[in-house]
Length: 265
Length: 265
DNA sequence: CGCAGTTTTGATTCATCTCAATTTGTGTGG
DNA sequence: CCACACAAATTGAGATGAATCAAAACTGCG
Image (cartoon, rainbow over all chains, first blue to last red):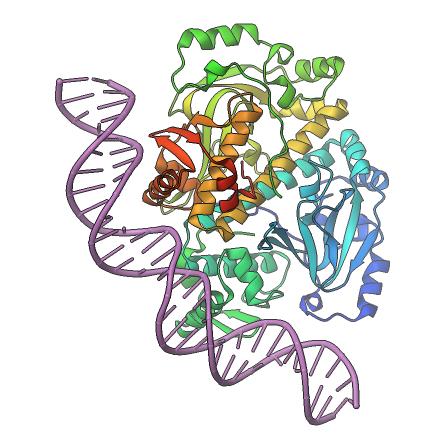
């Protein structure tokens, strides 16, 4: 069973909406200037750090925030690498692009998820990451993170674990892309989203997709028509209800039987 | 362009053979008790460390070696995680297995490559890793590595970079599995092997595959018959020559045109 | 030297893609 | 606030690439 082991923080339910008034973002920003007040703190990078350690880590990595509007890039392939980012609010997609223009989405990130690990090795990003809705991230300058994690063992461990978790997550996707049939892929995908929403305190049984059918297809190695057809089929079978981006899971076990054994983040 | 940026050490050419007499392994073992004498040192974990740093890192991570015979597992999914491993000599495959018995090879590792990163997060391995020929690895107890990398900035950096590189490598495979056709996948695979052999000082133009058609297929998300057919087709087109596991690349550019734009480790 | 495992090759089937048309939804500007 | 234009989703029909099933040839390991 390959799945992300992260448990995520409970977010206020109103965060789930696609549109979000600027006033709310402002409020969040004011009340969570530091990790100590952040509502995803427990399940973000500084998770597991004691208050002291957190303080030190936080001071050392004096990170700011960055607002990314829907459709904007947090960073693009080729950009020089300086920071890691933790999603505080919102939803992102990361993707690779080949010379001949084909692209492949490698992940969808939501609150608590870490972004930017692709840039550490060469000090240039190999992925592009774009917000699928107005979003807010914490910025952790990597240089400071390096220093801090030398001093704070627990932070170093968190960082290593996050990277390892990402590696394991990707194994799950390779499995999905390499061995699963279309129906299994889509079932896996829905269950994974469900789990992740649930882990964040939302109902896992119904949610709004933040991405298009084409984006789902890109992630799953399928064409958008195939994704659409399979969602329709699932609906006919009474497994789910869909209305555009809204999905309600009616028969979780049925979906799991279809190929949800391996959940993929 | 997504590809492994590692540059690897020059190995004596006789290491390329599938079979290797025990006497040679013994010799290697004696002459390379420490990283300072290891012929893959430059491109292994301690790469870039000064002699002092190397000393400290090495002392802290007093690692031994481990011999793994062909067909034996270095570790298996579920095993508790204790160490990272660097391939010193030989060839490995790593793979995930699902509940229903399907498996997917996630990588082939050769001299200088790092193994075990999948275990850091949960402290249990999620992959199994098996030697495809008699092999020898360096063992780096993770606890010691943690301590050492707190003290030695350069070691910490090397470790982070190795993990990031693995993440980027996997993005390349996701791209391959998600968007490439069978011919492109096989062409990519051959070119990648070629590059990696070349980077290690071997001729990139001809080499012996260490894995079966089935293993290649598992890695590439194809059936073994498809792999075989495509190799035959490449031969008909004059792109390569094959005789069982021996491959000679006749037209590198031709292969690259076919889909080698993205090299995958 | 023989046998098990590997590889090649062929014939056929099937899942997914492609192309195409229609419907539905969404954001914008009058 | 409505209408329009563009983007997204659905659905169908047909094409196609890879899987499957099957058999024969080869290799190398014991």
